[in-house]
Length: 102
Image (cartoon, rainbow, N blue to C red):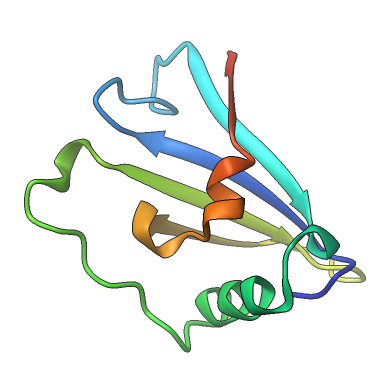
């Protein structure tokens, strides 16, 4: 991930099933690459490339959140999308999310 890239963030699941079919609440956010540290951008780049796999979810995490990240790279038409468990997502990315009515 580069400083000029844009990251869209969507939090899914949890006890209320946010983001699922029929849900009236969406939890979304976005960040510009320059808003993240070099280490955070490197971690996200590794997740998008598949060179780093997130740890499996813990037992009993059925009501945990998952994050769908969509990376819009400068000069690339098609965005890249990954879905990750909450623990794999940097704190600054998780903090960018806000709830809105769908």
